[in-house]
Every structure is written in C-alpha cells, then in structure tokens.
Length: 366
Image (tube, rainbow, N blue to C red; front, side, top):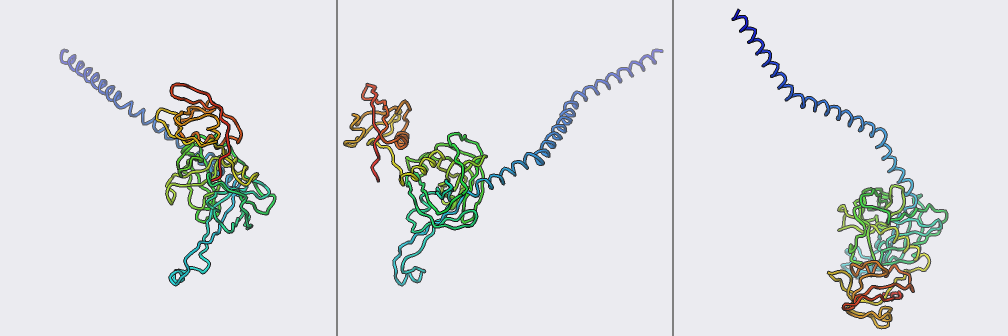
C-alpha cells in the first residue's frame, strides 16, 4: 500500500513539474509567437496598403506629373541669343577656324509666356549682348524676338514676339511656399526640349548666391542644368513660383536657385511698362553691427539721407517698424519701396533713440 502511494505521489510530482515546465515554456515562447502573429498581420496590412497605393494613389501621382506637363508646357519657350565674338584675324586664328568677322556664339535658355499678345520673361544672362534673339514655341513656330528691357540686378529680361492668342502661365505667390513643398522645373537643358524635373523647396530667402543684394532666391533640389535658365519653377497646381536662374558650380549638384515669383512678376511688369526698373535710394554707406542694426559710415551729399539729417555714426535699427538685421536687408527694402514714399527710420545716435522721416529717392543709373 505504501509503495502504491509512493508511486502515485511520484506521478503527481512528475505531472506538476511537467505542467510547470510547459507553463514556463509557454510564458517564454508565447510573446514571441504572439509577436510573429502581429508581425504577419502588420505585413499583410502593409502589403494591402501598398497594393492599393500601386493601383490608386501612385497612379494619381503619376497622372499629376503628366497633367502638369500639359498645363505648363505650352507656355514655356526655347530662347536662343546670338552674339558675335570678336577674334583676332590672322593665320593662327584661321587654322583654328576663326572667321574674318569673328565667331558666332549662341546662348541657349528657356522662357515663359506672360501675356497672350507675345510678351515673354527670361533670364537676362541668356540674351545679354545678343545681336539677334530667336524664340521657339511649343507648337514649333519660330519667331524673332525684340528685347523690351532688362534688369541685370535681378537677372530678368522681357522679350516681345509678334504673335497673338498665346497660352499664358499663371503666376503663383511664392510667399506662400514652405520648405518641403514639391516643385517642378521645366525648360530646355542642353537643348533637350521641355524637360520636366521635380524636387522640393529646399530653402527660402537665400542671399549672396551670386553676391547681389537685390536678389533673394528659392532653393530647390529639382534638377536645373544649363539651358533651364529662364524657365518656370511651378507648384502642384502648375502655378509659377519662380524663374530658374542659377546652380552651384558648372553642373547640377542638387542645389539650384530660382527668382521668387513675387519678385519676377513685379520686375517683369515694370519692364513691360517702362522698359527698365527704377529702385529706391537714400544715399548711405552701411556697415554691419554684431549687436544688430546697421551703422552709417558715410552719407552722400544732397541725398535723401542727408536732407533727412542722418549722419555718419548713426545706427539704423528699424524702418517703418521692421527690424534691420543687416545692410542687405536695408538695401533690399529700399529697392522695393516706391520712389517718393516717406518711411520712418528708427535711429540710435549715441544714447538717444530718434525717429527720422526719410523720403525715398531714385537710385542713380549705374
């Protein structure tokens, strides 16, 4: 009887130990097993999402690209500026292929139709010093173009061709852009007609790209190459947000620049109306201050600044309440103000804060 009880007790202990072992293994293995189930479910969900995207969403994105090409393409033109390069005419020049009248050089770029009656916008460097300018439209028609006017400071020029009922691009407001938004560039890189590339807005308000205080650029990683100059940078709706104009280096490195539409539109309209651009001027030489504001180092005689009583040593901190953090900021602000407008300058003279009214004058022609 005792032996039988002992055997039963041993069996119970074995069952308990085995059960405990099973429970222990289950506790260890179950989370992993559950994780695998959840992972499989997640993979299935992701696969379903991907398949749906392939069928619907990505298809829509693809159609967006083709739609943009159709919307903006007809208003983009190819621009070729022809200039004659003077060369020394002698035996060596002849051996090199030189011609008695000099060599003909072509500058190829892009442009944008900005009015139905034949006004076009492009970069000034595309047509600078050209003896003849040729424009080819999307429908393959070719026109001789006249230079209405140009603004070297912003690298913009307006051309005119004898054509009517042309497709016009819609200007957008570059002030509404944000870093990260998608943009598309279309133009004539390396003579490749109406090439469409895309990227994002990488930066806003870039200054000093070409060392010019008149320019603030949009930065983009959309591919911009020689020949794109003067073409549009557009948003997802096909609205022109900028005019492509510059790259870093001689070839594309993922950093391109465009003149913001707010600047381009204003400059092109002024050139259309007057043939040139007038800029504000007060007659100051400025120096940057680490502490903020800008210090005046010289005042031109009989200039608006002199007539207002500004002096060397004064520090300008604000114009009409807007903080001035650098000479470039002040110059840019002055060039955009209408001639004859009066602004209020906040000036620090020694320990005294003064508010000085200054009338904007016309900048002398350079």
